[in-house]
Image 1 (cartoon, rainbow, N blue to C red):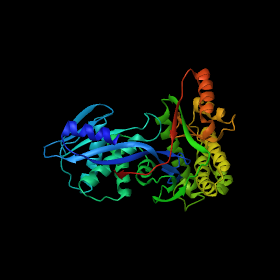
Image 2 (image 1 turned 60 degrees about the horizontal axis):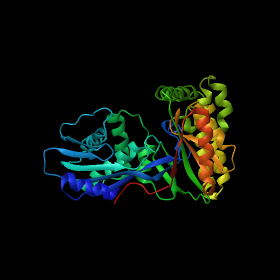
Image 3 (image 1 turned 30 degrees about the horizontal axis):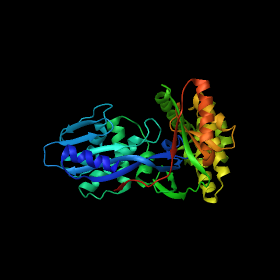
Image 4 (image 1 turned 135 degrees about the vertical axis):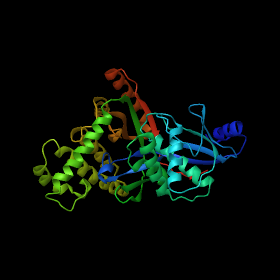
Length: 381
């Protein structure tokens, strides 16, 4: 990809680019906890977005996308988002830099990547972080990684219209090869945890479905959590979010909350606990416990938070029938997307064939399989 971007840059802009890379991410466990300032456990992957960039002496910035085979020009003092257009992410990051007081000049840029489309690996965060790092390196701004992650988050929220959390750009910026990060979404502190899976590997099974109620359901779940906090403050005046509660508080929480709210609060409280338990299990090399926690997470997302779907539940049920998989859970917002599995590598192909046959028979859909390895975060190449 580096060679391809360099050749494309030379052909379009007749210059040598500075090159950077930012990865996508997986989230091992800790779903729908970030907006309650909870804990998540992401890791950068080896797939990502490459950006080649160089200054130009023109009155416009020029950008070329390898994926879309398209060039786009814009002026730094006259930027406006184009809904659904890839260049919106570039203008969004430029706007964040302007507002932070960084003096940008006109530039040329080529971008491309190898993140599977719709795989839940957060290509948008990888794109935003790579663009931010490219500009920081080109103009020697020396922007801290945490700031780059925050700029990427705000850019997506304001320009792309995605109400995303901090986890995705943070993981893209701070990832380390062979390590996941236990991230506190309140204070943005994290600690790295080695991920040694031995004979096992991480495999995503893409359901190839995306149900339309995802965005409205997300807002409803978020509102339910916020409403629960308001009610629970009467008994727990010191809490700010559900992350401040412990599993031992659940009997009291159940008495205080309406039946419609309690399961959602229960998920956030127990999922935060599972993040810490998974980190401890990995440090001890207890992969069976990691697998059990993945299954418990899926059950909670399915039954308590109600963000799964029949296709994901079917795939999860299939993994329970084989000793090849230690555990599996849906990953991401829900209502479609991917199942994350911890699968024995030597038997991976047999497992894929079995899953594909069962899924095609049940839904007349062919799933996609994405093997992921944990790689380093954003960097200059």
